[in-house]
Length: 336
Image (cartoon, rainbow, N blue to C red; front, side, top):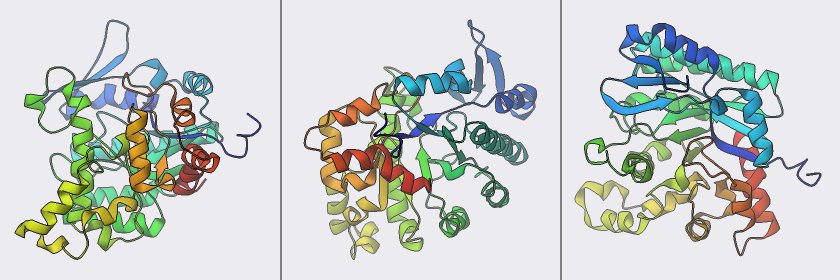
């Protein structure tokens, strides 16, 4: 522990539901097209009539004291907290802005109460880019806000669409990294069984988002913009050879021929959520240890409950590699 005091272990993929955010949903979700209820254990449950997936908010993802207790068990020093389903894009724009403000203010309060334990990632009402810019400028001044948290698609729209570009420009100017996360993956009509919406849907969404940012010109337009991909980049790193070959032969990818997609691999950061050491080893070969940050997906059932041990047991890593992945890369990315 003493050795780690100056290099705190940072989890970049940890989810939280603030009480004030839940209370706002309970008061006003019904008036804005959603529903809040309780499960048999009394946990808040959010649902939308258009989406089969429900969001259950358990105490370990609400109560900061329980979160700190779990962090100690898992040898995590700092959480970069983020909102997971339902996020805010489902809401009418004015309510989406209200929800975003409630989340961002709660992140600042959490950081103020636990300055050595928590930093926040900003939520914006991307369904209304003019509101999103307004809230970005406000929330960027709040204590503890260190990144923008963004779904890998916004209400069915991919991330390269031009009305999102002012957000990217402002993030680049403010040196705010963008952390991506899946939300209601595509293909729901075929992934209702076997938990495929998560097992396959989440990695597919990361691959689509990364490809759109590359092929849609976002990373070229904003060369200093930093983007973190969850679930170890999803399908993007593993299909990079196929994508590069498509760029050579497909006329609809002719605009990419001066620079293949593989040249953009190191423009992204990637979390460690692979659940397989050899897969993470291959990712290290592709992008290097300086592009990988620890992530656990706290506290979902698919989370990595021993993320530090997972990195420590990877064969072939130097001590410096492990320190970068456990701490240094995230410190630099989040400006800690």
